[in-house]
Image 1: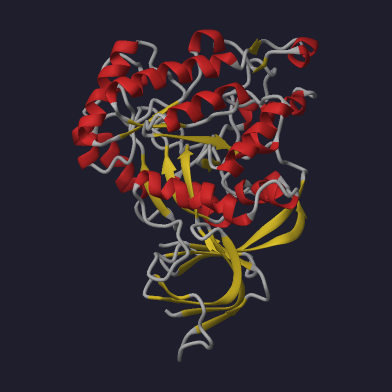
Image 2 (image 1 turned 90 degrees about the horizontal axis):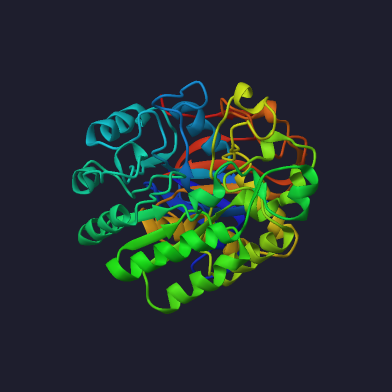
Length: 432
């Protein structure tokens, strides 16, 4: 089907501009951005000045298959992604068992096929069982479709093992994703150390735990020349080291979660476990520094770090509750808080949420140019609503934004020109 988006504001993260025009989508690709009239037999979508942008490419989504399907299935995650304007999910390997062999990777690839209305790609573990002792078969995993390698929040503590993994990844051109957090200092911590954590009686971890781990990894990248992405940089003290690494020509990028851009440690004040994250929420100064780093391009990627946890995992004392929050559906409305506050423009947001992650992983999408894949999100950035977590499509509903006033609604999501979500009809269109 040919689509004609009429009177739409077009976000182009490559050109760093927002312009008004009429967009034609044909055969799954963007055919024109400044069309005067719709082609014959095209479906006309009157946008009335609403915004059309590249679909979000979300690095680091956790799905509970295999091992925790009751928390999130491929189908529920896919429906949540479509409703949130996420057109490509890149899943983490922190499953049970971990995605550490070609057979497990092929299993999840088959399970996801036909279950999700959006694109889905998978990261593989860096070491077997994410135990940090034995490297996975990186070459075979690449052949099976892995787009990157990570042990997620299980940091490889043995520097020699990490060096071997990076050396081998370098020889194959594989991307390694690290979690910069010193595990010794972080063990048992649930908050960022400081006056607030002390007053609340919460065990804290210094921001230097992130900086120390990042410095170690940068030394190894300098030694091996591997491609590296830090999944979450959340502290201002890490930024100078990141800037030096880039200035020295290391093939390094960095990401931050939407929660660390929009929330801070004071949100832990009532001991609500939906705000317990890994790493923990930081100070307001750190949050502001992260936003500024995204604006300057020093931090390349914003991700949801979608981590579903069931009610039983969260209905525990704060120190005992499982960390993490769902974010596929709240990703864009939360990001638009930064837009409405004047901190980030729409092109800056979609550069970090769509263009950069797609380019870093070598995936299509993220571009708003003629000939590009028509993975698109149509949204009203000004539509206000109060979030009710029980309306979320994820199986788990552990969102810190429950009851929050948000602004910005996804109206429709398109994958290769096919509509997979329509808010106006109140229903999701998923593949059979």
